[in-house]
Amino acid sequence: MALGAGRNILQLTDQITRHQPELVSVENDELAERLKAELRKRDVSCPRIMTGEAGLVEVATHESADCVVSATVGAIGFVPTLRALEAGKRVALANKETLVMAGELMTSAAEKSGAELLPVDSEHNALHQCLRGEKLSEVRRII
Image 1 (cartoon, helix red, strand yellow):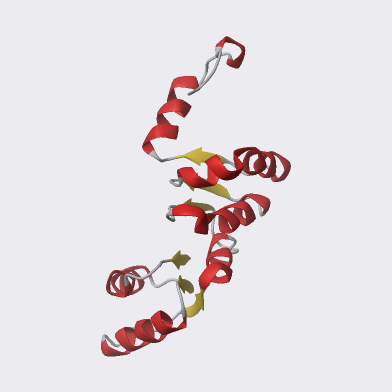
Image 2 (cartoon, rainbow, N blue to C red):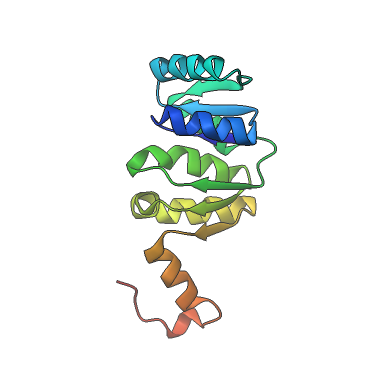
């Protein structure tokens, strides 16, 4: 298992304690050092720690991941989400920006690899639910 986080080191430490992931990603090297210190303080084993976009990509493509929840804010989730889809992962997408920026690219990558792209953000999940089982030819437009 792998966990990607940004800056909330205390919450990530709690999650590491509970779930014992093999890999975690944080925003930068300074936060990685803070995480290590917090884990030592709690006497919790330290997983492999990566940083930045490369760390998020490693988390999103982790070999044991069968479902990737992409819930980053803004454009930071673009590359990790694309790489997860290219790797054939099921992606639960809670990040609208990724689809707004490159929806066609994301859906194409999912089609090509056989990945599943599931909308879990409220707005695009509502659309997904409305269209499920309907004939797309009957939909004039989505605004």
